Structure formats: C-alpha cells, structure tokens
Length: 109
Length: 120
Image (cartoon, one colour):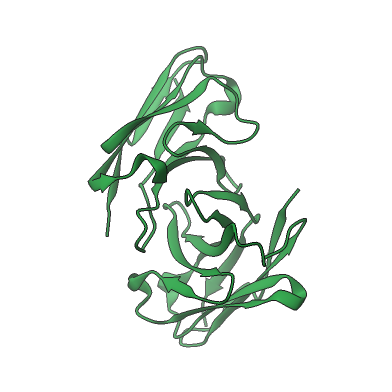
C-alpha cells in the first residue's frame, strides 16, 4: 500500500497570500496518477487537480500542481476567502488500494 | 451534468450489514471510461477508499475491510451498491459514492454523502 503523507497539517495564511501544500508518497507514484481535492465543512470533496498538474473543469488558474516520483505540491496563488478548506492528495498507483493523504487544513490567519 | 445520490439506512446495529445504494443520473454507469467507487470519512477524520466496480462487474476492495465489503451494480436502474457486513462502531462514517476516471484514477463526481451510524 502506498502511504501519502501531507504537510503541514495546518497552514495559517491571510487572503492574498500563497499556499504551498506538500504530499509525499512512501513509494514512487506515476505523476499521471496523483490528484488533489478540496473539502469544505459539511461538503463532499471536490476534484481540483489530476495527473499531478492538470486542473479539473472549472478550477481557477490560481491553483497549480507539480511534482513527480514521491514528492508532489499543490500551490494556491493569491488565496481567496473561498479557498480556506481542507485539501487531500490521492494516488491511483494501478494496484489497489487507492489511498488518500491525511489532509492539510488551510485556515485564515 | 453527472449527479450521484447515496441512499440507505442512517442507523445500523452492530454485527449487522450496512447497505447503501448510489443512483447515478446524467450519465450511464455502463460507460467504459469510468469506474464507480465508495469512499468513507469518519467524523473529523480523513478519507478512506473502500472499493470500486468496473463495467462488467469486476471489483477491487480495500484489504483493510477484511473481505466484509461487496460492491454490485444494477445497470437497469443505473445504480451501484455497497454492502458491508459485521459492522462495528468503527464503521460509523459519512459514506460517499463517486465516479472514477479509468485512465487517471481521479474521482471527478461525488455524491453529497450519507451518514451511517452503527449503534444498538
């Protein structure tokens, strides 16, 4: 099983700042198979990125993803009030189980 | 626009079987480009993938469920279902159904989630 470790656990930032979220895998993950989700309280997760760097439909370009191998990053430029939420990475390494990271909470400073 | 909706009992007794159904609208579960999956989230915790079903009926499950899970499909109703046997309080969670992309593996459409509580 591929374990995904997200850091930091909580990120305290102000609107307009940049958020950098990390997702580290216990073994190499094809960049094609790394996704990011945003979850707000009481809501289902929403797909942000797939294939490590491809934005999902309707996702603004202030969100970007990068990385390869075992280290992946989600960057949110110029945080908007609606961006304060919990973010999860997820890998699809081909063989189950599919796994999620433990999440990073982006909170208002 | 694809929509998914979970349904099923919100309260299940310990040792019994949890049964949930996901109804898909705006798209067919028979599409070969996708698979259909169940994910759960205990209160205040992260996401756990439970299993998936592909068109044709092949399935994969999370080994952590120790063979308690069964996912099936009903193409005539455009639905897929989850059964989880021998439940305990540890199975209390919000259960989500979602659509998975066959090629990249991401979950692009999710249901709103349904809370299932295991309690006597």
